[in-house]
Image 1 (cartoon, one colour):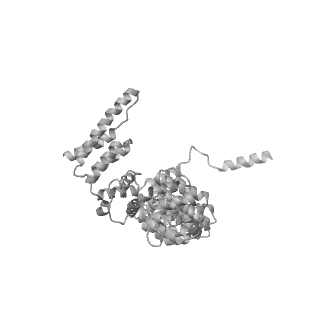
Image 2 (spheres, rainbow, N blue to C red; image 1 turned 120 degrees about the vertical axis):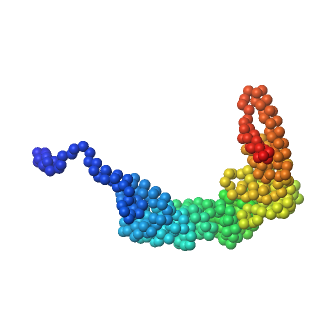
Amino acid sequence: MLAVIAIVTAAAAAEEPLMQGMDVADAAKAVAKWVSPPAQGDKPWSGDLAALTGRDARALQVAMGNLIRRGAAVLPDLAVLAKDQDWLLRSRVAQVAAGIGGTDAAPLLISLTRDGEARVREIATLGLGRCEGPGVYERLAEQISAPEAAVRQAAAQAMGFLGDVRALAVLSRWSDESDDFAKRAMKESIDRVAQRPEAIPSVIRLLEDDRGPRREAMLEACARLQDPRLCPALVALVDYQASGPWSAYLATRALATNGDSRAWEALCRIAADAPQQDLRDAASESMRALTGYSGFGKAWTLWWRDHATEVPRLAERDAFIADLHDLDRPLDRTGLARFSTDELMTLVDAACGSPGSWWAARAFSALRADDPQRWMAPLAARARTTNEAMTRLAMIIFIDQLDGPTSATTLRTVRSDLEARVTAEAADAKEGKRMAPDHGAELLALKAALQRRER
């Protein structure tokens, strides 16, 4: 038997051409194809379209990136490829169209969400989250009820990326979803959409109109928001007898981040007298977050007795601050003038918030809409008393940007205060044999602001 195998092997080898080094002809032809200019009449992306139909993973990745960068110009050709019988090619077309996004790619992706292959429908559905225009949200609202769990998950994720506030009513039904991954995607997208400032009126309507699991889904999302426009709607739900123990608990907890003085009375009453321990604890925790007072149980009755007279004025101010969260509301100097700078210092705190925050930008816009002169002394006092370098730097920038009539004098006062601080800290550091704090950023900001006023 071994002899027969050896004879057959030798014969087969004799029929094969002798190998002389590496066979690089095919590779050389491929390289020449990629570096050669397109043939006369070909579109600049013809080679990329051809690579889209191939099996070379590296060439495919490059081609898809090139097609996405070319944008809407390639969409008519992609629409032709989208009719191919190979579902894998159609899925690649969906990925490229999703990468292009916008209003131009929406029609092609909407058509691919009706593809016969579920994996193509999944990719196209997810891609709609990068699109806009007529029919996009409506198609996603249909896909959220698709028979395939993966498609429903993609639709939920796309709704979060799209940001259409109409999605809140659909996504709040996540308790009806049987698939865990799709359910998680719906929860995450509720949070993503609800974070948009224009979504809050829709959130309030859902809290007022919905019942049961859908309302509870929105209440859970509210716990991760920070918008005082929600305060009255949440206060209306803390009555456990009217809204139920679980909804009351969720509403009470959400007031920790969305409440203000308008919620104090209700929360104090619940913290002191609610029959459920969890509800009392939630109310105490929310009050601690809102006031800084570390009370429990009946202690909140005493706290409310001592502070009840302050609430009418604070509630008026807090309602005004809540209205400022509406980006469509004009910034009115007359409205701001109704309150002292001490009462409006919460706007300064907000403007010092996270960079890129829409509310930080809105709060600073409100400060700029006010009379700048009345803010010079309060901002200088804040710069002098704070021990945080970043807060002091922010006060310098605010004084500079508000630019009241006495801003130059105010900036010189801040500089004198800072120089005195630098001298005192240097002496303390020398005595303690440690490094003194660095105030270079603050001094540089002061120098630049004063130089602009001396030109």
